[in-house]
Image (cartoon, rainbow, N blue to C red):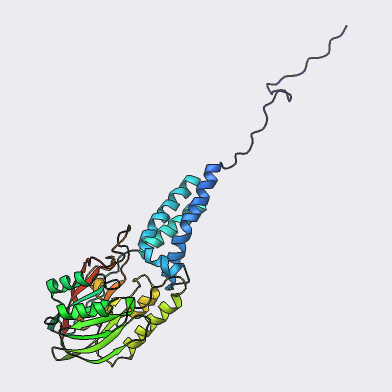
Length: 345
C-alpha cells in the first residue's frame, strides 16, 4: 500500500501556527496629553509676542497680557519641553520659534545713542509717584524731605493729600499746579521753580501741566495718568495716551519737555511706544539702563513685575541716574531721575 507523500518543509511556519502581524502602535494617552498641554502653553506667549512684533496692542486680553511679556518665557519654555516629550517635531519647531520670539521681545531696551546738546546748565532731580488714593502721602513726604527733588509729580493725590504735601514741603517746593479731585482723579506737580501757563490734558484722571523757568530756560512740565487698560476701557486708555501724544506734538518747536507719572503702560505697549518713540522723547530709565526695573504692583502677594511709571524728556534733558524707591502705603514704587538741562546750541 502506497503512502501519501510527506508535506514539503522549508523552515517556514505553518499558516495555522504563524504569529499574528504586529498591531500599529498608536500614541499613548500621555503623549497626546503632552502635545495638547504644549499647545495650550504656547498659545498665549505666541499671541503676545506676535502683538509685540507687529507693534500692536490688540484687544482684551492682549493689552493686559503684554504687561507680563518677560514672564511668558516660562510657559513658552514649558511648552517646548512638553513638545519634546510628545515627540512632535512640528510642534517642537513651533515651540522653539515662540520661545525665541518671546525671549527676544523680553530683552531690556538698550539705551539710545547719546546726542550732545551742549554743556549742563542745571541739575534737576524729579520724583514721580502714585500714592494710591493718598494712602502713601506720608511716605512720599518723608522721601521728598530725604531726597530733596526740585520737581515732584504725584498721581492719585486727593485734596487732603495735596494739602499735606503743600504744608510739609512749602519751603522746599513752594509752587504747585494741580487737578483737585477725590480718589484717583486728583494729581499735583510741586516745584521749586515758579510756574506759569497752567493747564491740564483732558482725561478721566487729573493730568495737570505748567511751564517752569529753570536756569533761564522755559521747561514744560506735564503729569501723565491715563486710565489703565482694564477690560472694557482699552479704547479709553489708548485715546488718553493719544491725547498726551497730541499735547507733546503741539508744543512750540524746540520747547523742553518733562513728562512724568503713572502711564499705566510699559515699553511693551505700542500705545506707549508711539508716545515716546524716536528722538522726540527719551525714557530716563532706558537711558540709564533700567528699562525693565518694575514699579508695580508694590503691594500684595506678587512682587512688582512691570514698569508703568516713567520719566520722559526731550533730548536736551539728559538722564544721568535713575532709581526706583518704595513708598509704603502705595502700590507703586516711585521713580527718581537726575537730569542735566543742556544749554542751547
